[in-house]
Image (tube, rainbow, N blue to C red):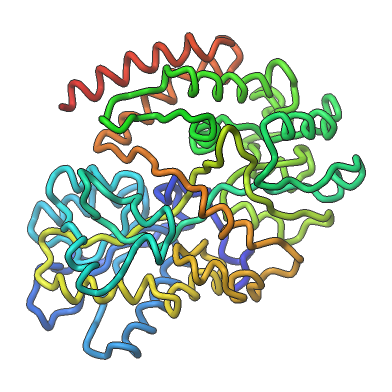
Length: 428
């Protein structure tokens, strides 16, 4: 399979988002069946995802003939509801894909803590996955093992950089270095230096680089801190002050439903910081391009996209389920993720392997090593149980800021902070 044929859709932060297609859900199997029944594994996505997960299940069957897994692929827009219904009915999946809403489940005691099973299997999440190994935790307990995890990286137009005599981006670039390059690369009204940071994984990266945090260690909102305000203001100024990023009106002039993912291959923006899926639109472009780690602020920090594998509380095959998860996240099985062009495997050994660095579908000489380098900088996202509600508050609260109607990040985030405090207080 080529990357192009995989028909990538832009995934949500850490994986939960648009499906690449619609698959009809088969009848729900019982994840709480007898010990010799097949393990039920639920995932979301489209046909390319189904094929890759099934290929990994087939490898498991060869390695462990005693383990049988039945794959249930559910369209992403109905995934949460379907899985919640299964769990409530006592037939939750043995293995289930989770992402940023993981703690919506764990806070309701719907997932099995995996610390003891991981220890028994000698699976060290930090060793196998780096900083993302602890992403899926709640109240100091591990609830999912990372499976897919690609950090935000910088896609850049090599031809434009060479024409301007600008050196390629590196992880050592500062905000000032980035801004200077964006200014040099911008041709007013025609080409912009950068695609922008409106999507929260993008500007959150800046906030954490600046020493800020969205939710502090005590679980309290912290978006009105000086560090977060300064980061958001810098991102907004790129659009309205320096004009090195297209405004919403500029994007609208490019055509319907155009954002950075489309503007970069169309050579309307010279740099674009986003996820692995961006490459799906670059397989046939005629210009030179490459990938680099995202620049740094006071420190290096970057968002990641992906998902993990969890075990529902209703599973009666917990040991077998974890044995399968251990295999699915091993180098042997994780190689399938990149070989098919599905995503970035969470396993660091695979990210650093030649299979990942030179995948068969990549016909361009691209620095795929940027993903492994960036994995070292991934910050732990605040996966609070009220994740979806938090996103609504932030999105609504910053709408006028990104339209340029409210130019003060401080004023916008002060209002967002107030609403987040109310949200979390009411949830508590």
